[in-house]
Length: 129
DNA sequence: CGCCTGACGAAAC
DNA sequence: GGTTTCGCCAGGC
Image 1 (cartoon, chains in turn red, yellow, green):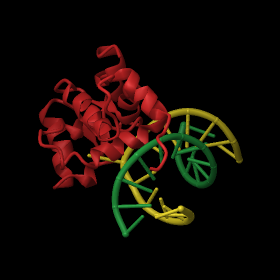
Image 2 (cartoon, rainbow, N blue to C red):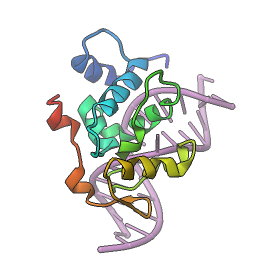
Image 3 (cartoon, rainbow, N blue to C red):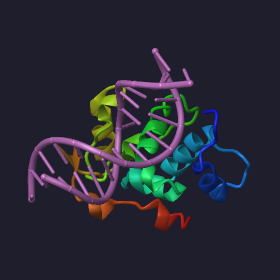
Image 4 (cartoon, rainbow, N blue to C red):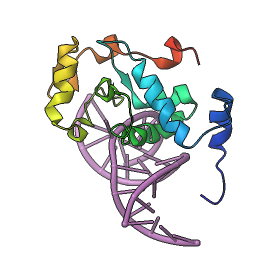
């Protein structure tokens, strides 16, 4: 913490607002909110969108604060590269995640998104970052 | 101040 | 092709 990371440069390039750190969480939430209904994306895709593709973990970490976010964050639309609902256990009721996905037209089988590649929503392309 | 953990990903075996 | 390990970066203790 004593020393700022180079990552700040990447984020700064994307969001020259002069802010970072906590803003990283905000960015993740922002992208997550833009996920169309009935579509899903991966942590890595969001990370790549933010310029931290190597740090897909950070995206998941940011989601850790999704409950802390004021606005509703459709974290249920975010799954891992495998299309598996890895974070379903982090929801209030774990079943709520796949339930929401099914409700939106996303087929979920055994904690795994069916036709994941088909309904995959890439923020990098859609948002053209 | 240092070590461990973590909702991932890609490479290695 | 499935399973296991390492790597990334940041936050919590």
